[in-house]
Length: 529
Image (cartoon, rainbow, N blue to C red; front, side):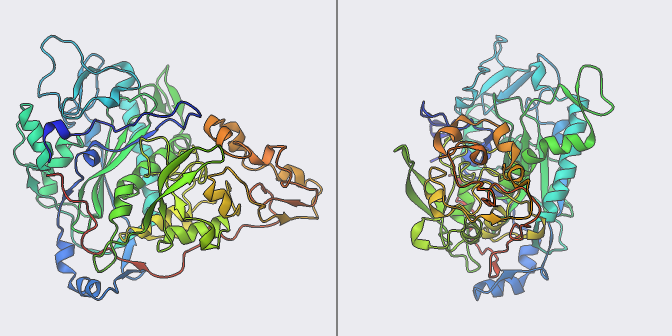
């Protein structure tokens, strides 16, 4: 059922253990994902490609360089402008009203806000919602808008180079509807006039500005990326989701909610009193955030992985829900990529874990519960942009997971190298960094300064994560930890720690063997009725 009483909170977060503290949530699920999933918008390219359909029925449809093209983004920033933003979705002046969820169509008559600006603001049920008053730190200034647009444009171009989709010459066109039935009933019960709207869920649940032209002529491209700027949640940087998908479940309308405070920032030349960034500095500063949320919106989520289909439409079943136990005795159940996934194979190669019986596959994130199973486990994949490790590498493992969805073909030549956990073996993964392997030492004998090239990534030591310090055998900086005797012995350096140039890495761009299967019908959760 989709009655108001059953709707989830704005942001589903369970109680966290008190010791040791896991990393704080920084990336939130979109409200639309909590309310039953995005709207389906069947596309002309699906009806027109009869050959692809026949191949799918034969179970032979694959994605290749010959039938794909780099992902074409249509960037939409209308939600950042007061004249086009959804009412009460964005703050443009201090003292204005904003809303979370569905509190009713008008602000409180008594002028008193009902949103509490603390770390628990997410806990208000969506069916109840709340009204808040915009503060200075929530405001979208002209300078902030310019910076957000600049960074998004730059990073979207990078993601376009990472992923390709099936080639089409047809525009993407959306339809008018009443949207998600459960959401519609809730809104109507609270006094909202819903009716039919173009890309209804994008407007009502993702709070996106939608031009009617998207439902008429449509637009040339593969995905629309709308950037919104909701009021802040404490400690949260952003959110990525999709508010519309095609019949195969491939996201068509992406929503990147840039939540981090931006009212005090500007691009050069800067207004007085603002923190100033050059164009290059701004991209470097927020690249990780934007890539992280775009990949979420393109499908890097637990629900998408669980609903992934092969070319015949059969569920792939590429995740297992399995127990894990830390070296301190803490236990949990988390989802693991199985051996029938490309992510599993890529992880085997990276960690040097080739004995299927010695591990259960690559686990997704356990704690914190907010975002659980929709990120890589930071203790294992700290360097990857889809973990909570505060790093920005887009690894071959992440691209392999995106290929597992059946929508994308990856460009592995554009990936970034990781070092955390590199070649540390099966036990490192199983224990989630609690036990290090012997590693595969890189031998270097002709450099007397080898010790200075065996310090590991300097970022590891610079970001002191108490959770990793308590859970990982050698803490946040294994290469600088004197307890680990195998790092440097005068002639060789553990490969995870080696930063010299005498031995070159050749496996960062590792491509899992085999063809990439195209998704068949069914890669979308059933709507919330």
